[in-house]
Length: 304
Ligand SMILES: Nc1ncnc2c1ncn2[C@@H]1O[C@H](COP(=O)(O)OP(=O)(O)OP(=O)(O)O)[C@@H](O)[C@H]1O
Image (cartoon, rainbow, N blue to C red):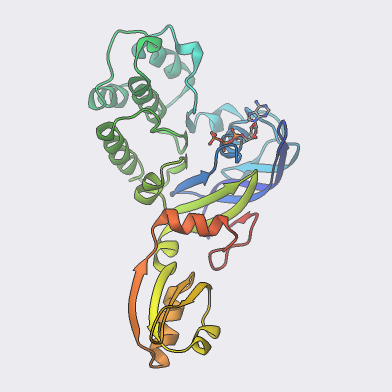
């Protein structure tokens, strides 16, 4: 059975006007999980609950298979890297080098050489205070500092905010090579669908504090398709996962299915001609999912 980095069981948290949860979610170890949702849907709150910056009102969280009632023990916390949506103001008056000296005291496995290499790769300015850096420059420092202790779980809250396209590409490449050992888990909250498309193995969708479920990205891309066939509407009634269907012209039917592999097999076995198929873009899939069309096997509120 696959190892689980973090597990949420029946988690609920009342924020000012919004209930976040209930959330039942297992983040599989060794994968990148893209966390997607509209503004205010609860993504940062979910990340803050993993870090114990926010405590849930109900339910439990397990870190690498262990539950803790109060604080997370330091040996566990030091395995978790974090890039916050907002910069840490306590570091404002420090240079990247000075801030790293403090971080190195906290993280047992801090790798100074790796940190220096990342600063060089990202062209982070040296010997100037972090508050004097541009938003993108500071972001590059923050990503470098989060990677430097080789965390086993990396929580990234909109990490690319402020990055130029070249730095963005560098970040994607760096995160890919960071995943190479195979036991690292990344939870990536982002509004950039292309980031999820390039990096994520799984997609977790949230909306208005509710979890819409978790699905494997490749399975979404392979199964959510637009198909054109030559046939009658009766045929469509027997096909699985049909969420849109339209009679186009002269016996041509256009449909969208969430179970394309199965649909293609049935059509093939029935001798029905497929005229054309089109893979949906990930943003189209997410829009349909948000409207309530679930991927096959996904239960709303659950991410197993
Ligand atoms: N410190 C806080 N106190 C009270 N309510 C809060 C606090 N922080 C966030 N909230 C509320 O909790 C809800 C979820 O916020 P959260 O920041 O988790 O959303 P998000 O999905 O990360 O949003 P965004 O994409 O805009 O960053 C929002 O309705 C927000 O108003």
